[in-house]
Amino acid sequence: SRTQELVRAFWGKPMPNGMVIQIEPGTPLPAQHPAFGRGMEGGQPTAYICQAGNCSVGITTATALADALTLPPQMRGQQQQVRAT
Image (cartoon, rainbow, N blue to C red):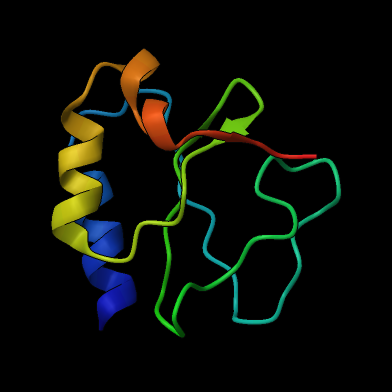
């Protein structure tokens, strides 16, 4: 499944402090989570790279996620980063 492809892409990169939170569609994240209010994009499983209270835009393909994870941490989603409020 596409969800498993995203998970494999994440775990295929060295992420010593990384974690995956997998939730069912329509299940909200807690208000204090940086990805609160976000969800699936275009009806597809979606990954967000969150760090220091900010999250990237949604990533819906394993290739795009793997590419984003090869960037230095401070540059992941830098141009597309938005502040979660």
